[in-house]
Amino acid sequence: MGAIENAALVAVRDCLGMQPHETLLVVTDPPLAAIARVLAETARPLAREVTLLEYAERELNGQEPPPPVPAAMAAVDAVIVVTSRSVTHTAARRGATAAGARVATMPGITEACLVRTMNADYGAIAERTLRVTERLTRASTAHLSTRLGTDLTLPIAGIAAIPSTGLIREPGRWGNLPSGESYLRPEEGRAEGVLVVDGALAGIGTVGEPVRITIRGGLAVEVGGGPEAAAFSAMLDKAGPAARNVAELGVGTNDRAILTGKILEDEKILGTVHVAFGNNASMGGTVDIPFHVDGIVLHPTLTLDGEALLRDGTPLFD
Picture 1 (cartoon, rainbow, N blue to C red):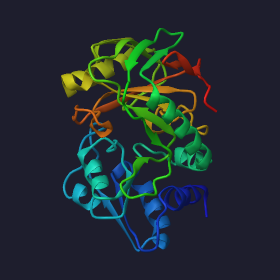
Picture 2: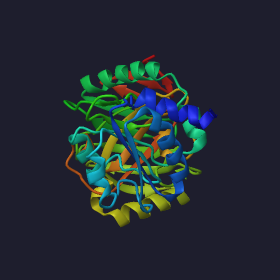
Picture 3: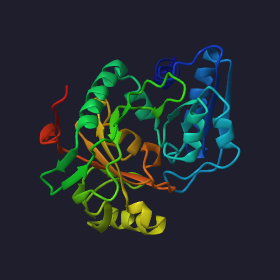
Protein backbone atom coordinates (compact mmCIF):
# COMPACT_ATOMS: atom_id res chain seq x y z
CA MET A 1 0.00 0.00 0.00
CA GLY A 2 1.41 3.39 -1.04
CA ALA A 3 1.56 6.63 0.95
CA ILE A 4 -1.68 8.04 -0.45
CA GLU A 5 -3.53 4.78 0.19
CA ASN A 6 -2.25 4.75 3.78
CA ALA A 7 -3.45 8.33 4.26
CA ALA A 8 -6.84 7.45 2.75
CA LEU A 9 -7.13 4.49 5.12
CA VAL A 10 -6.54 6.75 8.14
CA ALA A 11 -9.24 9.12 6.85
CA VAL A 12 -11.84 6.41 6.24
CA ARG A 13 -11.09 3.94 9.03
CA ASP A 14 -9.79 6.11 11.88
CA CYS A 15 -11.30 9.57 11.34
CA LEU A 16 -14.65 8.63 9.80
CA GLY A 17 -14.90 5.26 11.57
CA MET A 18 -16.55 3.35 8.70
CA GLN A 19 -18.30 0.14 9.72
CA PRO A 20 -19.13 -2.96 7.61
CA HIS A 21 -22.90 -2.32 7.75
CA GLU A 22 -22.67 1.32 6.64
CA THR A 23 -23.07 3.17 3.35
CA LEU A 24 -20.60 5.81 2.16
CA LEU A 25 -20.99 8.47 -0.53
CA VAL A 26 -17.86 10.06 -2.01
CA VAL A 27 -18.68 13.35 -3.78
CA THR A 28 -16.18 14.96 -6.14
CA ASP A 29 -15.58 17.19 -9.16
CA PRO A 30 -13.22 16.74 -12.14
CA PRO A 31 -10.06 18.36 -10.68
CA LEU A 32 -10.10 16.12 -7.60
CA ALA A 33 -11.67 12.97 -9.03
CA ALA A 34 -8.43 10.97 -8.91
CA ILE A 35 -8.04 11.50 -5.14
CA ALA A 36 -11.74 10.75 -4.65
CA ARG A 37 -11.34 7.42 -6.43
CA VAL A 38 -8.50 6.44 -4.09
CA LEU A 39 -10.68 7.23 -1.07
CA ALA A 40 -13.62 5.30 -2.53
CA GLU A 41 -11.52 2.24 -3.37
CA THR A 42 -9.87 2.29 0.05
CA ALA A 43 -13.29 2.42 1.70
CA ARG A 44 -14.91 -0.43 -0.25
CA PRO A 45 -13.58 -3.26 1.97
CA LEU A 46 -14.68 -1.35 5.08
CA ALA A 47 -18.28 -0.45 4.15
CA ARG A 48 -21.40 -2.23 2.90
CA GLU A 49 -21.72 0.06 -0.10
CA VAL A 50 -19.58 2.89 -1.52
CA THR A 51 -20.93 5.24 -4.20
CA LEU A 52 -18.86 7.79 -6.13
CA LEU A 53 -20.73 10.86 -7.43
CA GLU A 54 -19.15 13.59 -9.57
CA TYR A 55 -20.50 17.02 -10.50
CA ALA A 56 -19.12 20.06 -12.35
CA GLU A 57 -16.67 22.33 -10.51
CA ARG A 58 -18.28 25.30 -8.74
CA GLU A 59 -17.00 28.87 -8.93
CA LEU A 60 -16.84 29.84 -5.23
CA ASN A 61 -16.45 28.28 -1.80
CA GLY A 62 -19.89 27.90 -0.26
CA GLN A 63 -21.83 27.38 -3.47
CA GLU A 64 -24.45 24.64 -3.34
CA PRO A 65 -23.92 21.35 -5.20
CA PRO A 66 -26.57 20.55 -7.82
CA PRO A 67 -29.41 18.03 -7.53
CA PRO A 68 -29.36 15.12 -6.83
CA VAL A 69 -26.26 15.59 -4.68
CA PRO A 70 -27.97 17.01 -1.54
CA ALA A 71 -30.54 14.20 -1.47
CA ALA A 72 -27.83 11.58 -1.94
CA MET A 73 -25.77 13.09 0.89
CA ALA A 74 -28.75 12.84 3.25
CA ALA A 75 -29.46 9.21 2.32
CA VAL A 76 -26.23 7.54 3.53
CA ASP A 77 -24.43 6.93 6.79
CA ALA A 78 -21.30 8.89 5.87
CA VAL A 79 -20.12 11.32 3.20
CA ILE A 80 -16.67 12.39 2.03
CA VAL A 81 -16.74 15.53 -0.12
CA VAL A 82 -13.57 15.84 -2.22
CA THR A 83 -14.21 18.97 -4.29
CA SER A 84 -12.32 22.01 -5.51
CA ARG A 85 -14.67 24.39 -3.68
CA SER A 86 -15.93 23.94 -0.15
CA VAL A 87 -19.42 22.68 0.63
CA THR A 88 -18.79 22.80 4.39
CA HIS A 89 -21.00 25.86 4.85
CA THR A 90 -23.87 24.89 2.56
CA ALA A 91 -27.48 23.82 2.97
CA ALA A 92 -26.52 20.47 1.40
CA ARG A 93 -24.07 19.73 4.19
CA ARG A 94 -26.47 20.96 6.87
CA GLY A 95 -29.26 18.82 5.44
CA ALA A 96 -27.06 15.73 5.40
CA THR A 97 -25.95 16.09 9.01
CA ALA A 98 -29.50 16.92 10.11
CA ALA A 99 -30.52 13.59 8.58
CA GLY A 100 -27.86 11.83 10.65
CA ALA A 101 -25.06 11.47 8.13
CA ARG A 102 -21.54 12.27 9.26
CA VAL A 103 -19.75 14.41 6.72
CA ALA A 104 -16.05 14.93 6.07
CA THR A 105 -15.19 17.71 3.63
CA MET A 106 -11.84 18.01 1.81
CA PRO A 107 -12.06 21.18 -0.28
CA GLY A 108 -9.03 21.69 -2.50
CA ILE A 109 -7.15 18.71 -1.07
CA THR A 110 -3.90 17.73 -2.78
CA GLU A 111 -2.12 14.40 -2.65
CA ALA A 112 0.79 15.97 -0.76
CA CYS A 113 -1.56 17.51 1.81
CA LEU A 114 -3.45 14.25 2.26
CA VAL A 115 -0.27 12.27 2.86
CA ARG A 116 1.31 14.87 5.16
CA THR A 117 -1.64 15.78 7.36
CA MET A 118 -3.56 12.52 7.59
CA ASN A 119 -0.51 10.91 9.20
CA ALA A 120 -0.79 13.27 12.16
CA ASP A 121 -1.67 12.14 15.69
CA TYR A 122 -5.39 12.88 15.67
CA GLY A 123 -5.75 11.89 19.31
CA ALA A 124 -3.33 14.67 20.27
CA ILE A 125 -4.97 17.09 17.83
CA ALA A 126 -8.37 16.33 19.35
CA GLU A 127 -7.16 16.99 22.89
CA ARG A 128 -5.52 20.26 21.84
CA THR A 129 -8.60 21.34 19.91
CA LEU A 130 -10.93 20.66 22.83
CA ARG A 131 -8.75 22.77 25.14
CA VAL A 132 -8.94 25.71 22.73
CA THR A 133 -12.69 25.20 22.31
CA GLU A 134 -13.24 25.43 26.06
CA ARG A 135 -11.22 28.66 26.25
CA LEU A 136 -13.09 30.26 23.35
CA THR A 137 -16.50 29.21 24.65
CA ARG A 138 -16.07 30.75 28.09
CA ALA A 139 -14.65 34.05 26.82
CA SER A 140 -16.62 37.24 26.22
CA THR A 141 -14.17 39.19 24.08
CA ALA A 142 -11.41 38.15 21.70
CA HIS A 143 -8.67 40.53 20.63
CA LEU A 144 -6.42 39.71 17.68
CA SER A 145 -3.20 41.62 16.97
CA THR A 146 0.00 41.25 14.94
CA ARG A 147 3.16 43.22 14.34
CA LEU A 148 1.94 43.96 10.81
CA GLY A 149 -0.99 46.00 12.12
CA THR A 150 -3.84 43.65 12.91
CA ASP A 151 -5.86 45.17 15.77
CA LEU A 152 -9.29 43.54 15.83
CA THR A 153 -11.80 43.16 18.64
CA LEU A 154 -14.45 40.45 18.31
CA PRO A 155 -17.28 40.07 20.85
CA ILE A 156 -17.97 36.37 21.43
CA ALA A 157 -19.95 36.25 24.70
CA GLY A 158 -22.36 33.34 25.02
CA ILE A 159 -21.28 31.73 21.74
CA ALA A 160 -20.17 28.10 21.86
CA ALA A 161 -17.03 27.31 19.90
CA ILE A 162 -16.99 24.30 17.58
CA PRO A 163 -14.17 21.74 17.76
CA SER A 164 -13.00 20.29 14.46
CA THR A 165 -10.94 17.42 15.82
CA GLY A 166 -10.79 15.20 12.76
CA LEU A 167 -12.71 12.47 14.59
CA ILE A 168 -16.08 12.34 12.80
CA ARG A 169 -17.54 9.14 14.16
CA GLU A 170 -21.00 9.98 15.54
CA PRO A 171 -24.22 10.52 13.53
CA GLY A 172 -24.66 14.15 12.52
CA ARG A 173 -21.02 15.10 13.08
CA TRP A 174 -19.12 17.02 10.42
CA GLY A 175 -15.79 18.67 9.77
CA ASN A 176 -12.82 18.99 7.47
CA LEU A 177 -10.24 16.34 6.78
CA PRO A 178 -7.47 17.07 7.41
CA SER A 179 -8.63 18.82 10.52
CA GLY A 180 -7.42 20.58 13.60
CA GLU A 181 -9.14 23.85 14.46
CA SER A 182 -11.55 25.40 16.90
CA TYR A 183 -13.83 28.15 15.64
CA LEU A 184 -16.94 30.20 16.32
CA ARG A 185 -19.00 33.00 14.84
CA PRO A 186 -18.40 36.38 16.47
CA GLU A 187 -21.45 38.48 17.33
CA GLU A 188 -22.89 39.85 14.13
CA GLY A 189 -22.46 43.57 13.58
CA ARG A 190 -20.00 44.13 16.41
CA ALA A 191 -16.45 43.27 15.28
CA GLU A 192 -14.29 46.40 15.04
CA GLY A 193 -10.75 47.15 13.90
CA VAL A 194 -8.20 46.11 11.31
CA LEU A 195 -7.31 42.65 10.03
CA VAL A 196 -4.06 42.15 8.14
CA VAL A 197 -4.03 38.84 6.25
CA ASP A 198 -0.44 37.82 5.58
CA GLY A 199 -0.80 34.06 5.07
CA ALA A 200 -3.44 33.12 2.49
CA LEU A 201 -6.99 33.82 1.33
CA ALA A 202 -9.43 31.06 0.39
CA GLY A 203 -9.86 30.82 -3.36
CA ILE A 204 -6.91 33.15 -3.98
CA GLY A 205 -3.90 31.46 -2.40
CA THR A 206 -0.86 32.69 -0.53
CA VAL A 207 -0.56 36.43 -0.04
CA GLY A 208 2.42 38.28 -1.54
CA GLU A 209 1.60 41.72 -0.15
CA PRO A 210 -0.42 41.67 3.08
CA VAL A 211 -4.12 42.38 2.66
CA ARG A 212 -5.38 45.08 5.03
CA ILE A 213 -9.11 44.84 5.81
CA THR A 214 -10.84 47.57 7.79
CA ILE A 215 -13.82 46.28 9.76
CA ARG A 216 -16.59 48.43 11.20
CA GLY A 217 -19.89 47.25 12.61
CA GLY A 218 -19.00 43.66 11.83
CA LEU A 219 -18.44 44.32 8.13
CA ALA A 220 -15.38 44.60 5.89
CA VAL A 221 -15.70 48.21 4.72
CA GLU A 222 -12.30 48.71 3.08
CA VAL A 223 -9.70 46.41 1.51
CA GLY A 224 -6.17 47.53 0.67
CA GLY A 225 -2.94 45.98 -0.53
CA GLY A 226 -1.63 44.37 -3.70
CA PRO A 227 -3.05 41.94 -6.29
CA GLU A 228 -4.53 39.59 -3.70
CA ALA A 229 -6.36 42.50 -2.06
CA ALA A 230 -7.81 43.50 -5.42
CA ALA A 231 -8.93 39.92 -6.08
CA PHE A 232 -10.54 39.67 -2.64
CA SER A 233 -12.29 43.01 -3.04
CA ALA A 234 -13.67 41.87 -6.40
CA MET A 235 -14.96 38.67 -4.80
CA LEU A 236 -16.76 40.66 -2.11
CA ASP A 237 -18.32 43.01 -4.65
CA LYS A 238 -19.54 40.12 -6.79
CA ALA A 239 -21.03 38.20 -3.85
CA GLY A 240 -22.94 41.19 -2.47
CA PRO A 241 -23.09 43.14 0.81
CA ALA A 242 -23.66 40.10 3.06
CA ALA A 243 -20.30 38.67 1.96
CA ARG A 244 -18.62 41.41 4.02
CA ASN A 245 -19.96 39.92 7.26
CA VAL A 246 -17.29 38.83 9.75
CA ALA A 247 -18.38 35.21 9.90
CA GLU A 248 -15.74 33.27 11.82
CA LEU A 249 -12.83 33.39 14.21
CA GLY A 250 -10.76 30.21 14.16
CA VAL A 251 -7.58 28.86 15.77
CA GLY A 252 -5.43 26.20 14.08
CA THR A 253 -4.37 23.13 16.08
CA ASN A 254 -2.71 20.75 13.57
CA ASP A 255 1.06 20.51 14.07
CA ARG A 256 1.58 18.80 10.69
CA ALA A 257 -0.11 21.50 8.61
CA ILE A 258 2.00 24.00 6.65
CA LEU A 259 1.25 27.07 4.53
CA THR A 260 0.49 25.97 0.95
CA GLY A 261 -2.10 28.41 -0.37
CA LYS A 262 -4.81 25.76 0.04
CA ILE A 263 -7.13 26.99 2.76
CA LEU A 264 -8.11 23.47 3.82
CA GLU A 265 -4.62 23.00 5.24
CA ASP A 266 -3.62 26.61 5.89
CA GLU A 267 -6.41 27.30 8.40
CA LYS A 268 -5.35 24.27 10.47
CA ILE A 269 -1.74 25.40 11.04
CA LEU A 270 -0.85 25.32 14.71
CA GLY A 271 -0.01 28.86 15.85
CA THR A 272 -2.23 30.66 13.32
CA VAL A 273 -5.62 32.35 13.48
CA HIS A 274 -8.10 32.74 10.66
CA VAL A 275 -10.98 35.15 10.19
CA ALA A 276 -13.65 34.41 7.59
CA PHE A 277 -16.22 36.55 5.82
CA GLY A 278 -19.70 35.74 4.52
CA ASN A 279 -21.75 32.70 5.52
CA ASN A 280 -22.04 31.93 9.24
CA ALA A 281 -25.27 29.91 9.12
CA SER A 282 -23.42 26.66 9.83
CA MET A 283 -22.24 28.20 13.11
CA GLY A 284 -25.66 29.40 14.21
CA GLY A 285 -25.62 32.81 12.53
CA THR A 286 -28.15 34.52 10.28
CA VAL A 287 -26.04 35.11 7.16
CA ASP A 288 -26.77 32.32 4.67
CA ILE A 289 -25.19 33.10 1.32
CA PRO A 290 -23.05 31.02 -1.10
CA PHE A 291 -19.83 32.69 0.05
CA HIS A 292 -17.38 31.86 2.84
CA VAL A 293 -13.77 33.04 2.51
CA ASP A 294 -11.11 32.65 5.21
CA GLY A 295 -8.00 34.78 5.67
CA ILE A 296 -4.97 33.32 7.47
CA VAL A 297 -3.05 35.45 9.97
CA LEU A 298 0.51 34.37 10.73
CA HIS A 299 2.31 34.96 14.06
CA PRO A 300 -0.79 36.35 15.81
CA THR A 301 -1.37 37.33 19.39
CA LEU A 302 -4.87 36.30 20.44
CA THR A 303 -6.19 37.22 23.87
CA LEU A 304 -9.46 36.06 25.40
CA ASP A 305 -10.75 38.42 28.07
CA GLY A 306 -7.20 39.71 28.35
CA GLU A 307 -5.58 36.28 28.76
CA ALA A 308 -3.26 35.23 25.92
CA LEU A 309 -4.12 32.06 24.00
CA LEU A 310 -1.40 32.73 21.38
CA ARG A 311 1.50 35.17 21.60
CA ASP A 312 3.28 36.05 18.34
CA GLY A 313 2.23 32.67 16.97
CA THR A 314 3.37 30.66 19.98
CA PRO A 315 0.52 28.52 21.40
CA LEU A 316 -0.05 28.91 25.12
CA PHE A 317 -2.56 26.07 25.32
CA ASP A 318 -0.32 23.01 24.80
